[in-house]
Amino acid sequence: MNDLLPDWVAVEVAAEEDYSAELLPAEAAGLGARAVEKRRREFAAGRACARRALGRLGVRGRAVPTSGNRAPVWPEGTTGSITHTGGYCAAAVGLRSDVRAVGIDAERRTILPDNVRGSICLPEELAWCAERADEQWWPAVHFSAKEVVFKLWSPIVGTWLGFLDARLTIDVAAGEFEARIGAQRLAKTPAAPAVFRGRFHVAPGLIRSAGVVTAKEADGWQAP
Ligand SMILES: CC(C)(COP(=O)(O)OP(=O)(O)OC[C@H]1O[C@@H](n2cnc3c(N)ncnc32)[C@H](O)[C@@H]1OP(=O)(O)O)[C@@H](O)C(=O)NCCC(=O)NCCS
Image 1 (cartoon, rainbow, N blue to C red):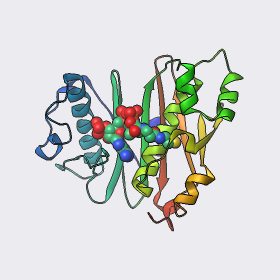
Image 2 (cartoon, rainbow, N blue to C red; image 1 turned 180 degrees about the horizontal axis):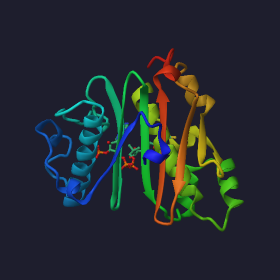
Image 3 (tube, protein in one colour; image 1 turned 90 degrees about the vertical axis):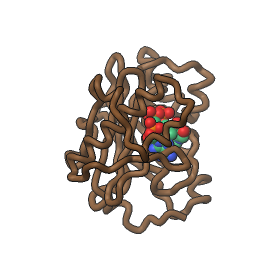
Image 4 (cartoon, protein in one colour; image 1 turned 120 degrees about the horizontal axis):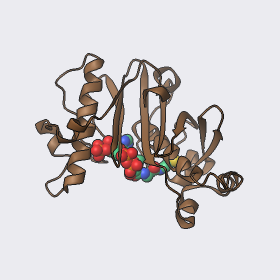
């Protein structure tokens, strides 16, 4: 994941032992008593990666609890993002002096069924994907990039953002995407950022996407 982010963001990808790492007491509540084994393992791996990434920024021994909207609560002065998908888990963390929000996402490279594509992609995005019909994974890239957009939007704006609230433009050669938030959504949250940018990578087994909103970019944006 560090190939998609600036080098001042600390990125850690889980190793096998991270899936059985101990949680700190403040983190365990975020898991819930009824979590199944698969969820326990991915949650543990995410927290292990998050704490290791924080350590690289000089923040050690601090828990990463879970907030009411399921977002991680990062130690003061930091922000970050966690993702997990079958067999892959990563965390990325930055200092708030550098970065206002970090978003990362990983997905298996799957072919989404038509009904799912239609709930993720706007008509113009579907048309763009249809031009690449021999590469059926592009709707899944839209999904992954839009999850990144949500993970950037959520800590800044604090409200819901639907998949059809953002229109993606993908630069295939550069491995970059730009997301423009729709006018209807912005009308409800006028102080929110209108554009988010990120990078993506498609491998046979895995789609990875990531983006940041720097502290400088966020100047002047206030949560409503
Ligand atoms: C929250 C959401 C983005 C998580 O994505 P996912 O692909 O299901 O799962 P991932 O493994 O990539 O990410 C899960 C992690 O996201 C983080 N997360 C959850 N809610 C979050 C939020 N509101 N803000 C930021 N991060 C959040 C958590 O760290 C979670 O892992 P954890 O529970 O182990 O701590 C997704 O479930 C969701 O609700 N999406 C709908 C909103 C959306 O994406 N809109 C698109 C706007 S263009």
